[in-house]
Length: 266
Image (tube, rainbow, N blue to C red; front, side, top):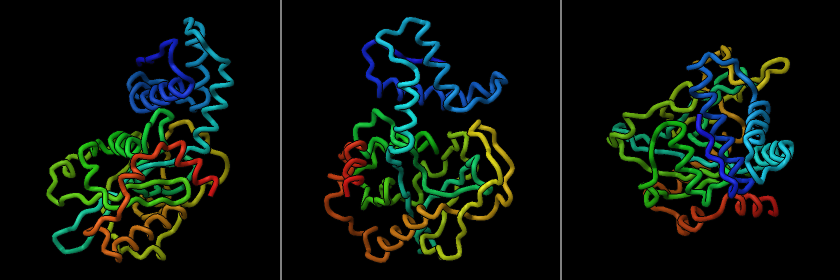
């Protein structure tokens, strides 16, 4: 595992490198080397102490990094994409990923996406990186296709129509360790019939261990995400899929940190 640290890195860049190292540990090293799973906090702290022993300078107290990292993961924005396509049946569909969540009983379904990296310069950069990391789809050349953005609390999703026969859609891979399944869901889905994931009784540590779920075939969505899904349905009814909204590019250019600050003020 390579940790790309230099003395000139800012604290945000250090946090970003540690985040990527932890993902690599969960996705590859733990299984390949037969390592016991450790939580994000312990991994983060151990890596920082290791770097301190190696003489990375300047170096701050590990607790300072850990504290900043916890604050970032708690308050940072979440970015992703609602990838939509028109099926041969004439019905619009949206791509969903079913993820394991160690604190939930069932598989939780959302659109591909995740937390902003501290070094992401724009919302679009967060969207592209997260979709690539989760399902192996590179959207870097698809910015011109974005027809709208869905902003729901601290979650941002770019709405991107895809060609049904786009070969990339037939070669998607579940790259993130927590993804269990990739499915296409009808946009006309009756959200009122969808349940939220049930919580596990008792405390379950965030140790990366995949646990059996009560009903892995049932579609369940977090309550906040159900609101985003309804927003997508409203965009469909307004004809936005065929006629993009104005000023979309201005939103995509926003800095994730500034975007969060604006939403906190409002």
